[in-house]
View 1 (cartoon, rainbow, N blue to C red):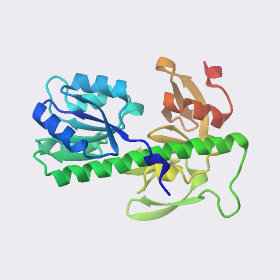
View 2: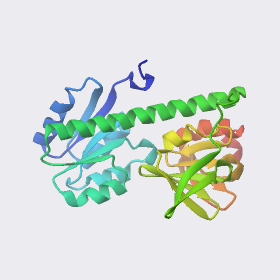
View 3: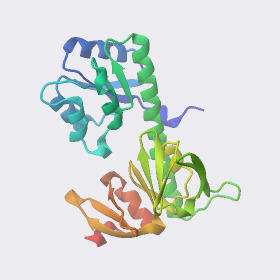
View 4: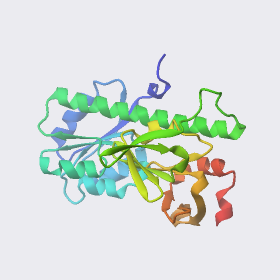
Length: 270
């Protein structure tokens, strides 16, 4: 069966201040029928405008550009709008910083075509994973609205194996306060303790009971039993406060799902 998340071509943007490099990447990308190129930018400012205008799912982004470099481009885009990013540069000293800002891959110029296509293939898989994650959370919200529960034997997970230093801990899901995305793993916040799980936020979120857990941001899932209060924030946003005092941002793209989860309109919090 064809994966429904793969039906639509992946919208792609290329950013490089060198025209020859930009055109070279565009030529390679045009060979892939799964991609739809929505634009090309030669400066960081153009890149920010293009990301906000086209909302590409995949961006190949040069690091070193005049005035606004690749890192500044990502800093200028709200976390909810960030695509899957493959950094492209001639300087390997930027590699560590690239992954610190959650770049998916790092291509060092000059690169072979095979290395380029390998990076693009892996980035496409990440885009499909994001699409499936979004579909899963919408399905969970629909299940919540009609009051359905999984059949016996098909329930949500109750325990998670996680790392605690050199040991492996068994964490009860009900004890989790909130979950934080950390690169290619997640951090479980359980009281004053923290545990690492080598699983993506999307995969773990799909295994959690949507009646108890809701994703409020691309980087955070909360246990609704720990919800304390809501605070109006900048431009119609909200800060979610948990019972232990933790403050997390509710992204605007997740506002409707959050309202369904708590069964109350957020307008009452203003």
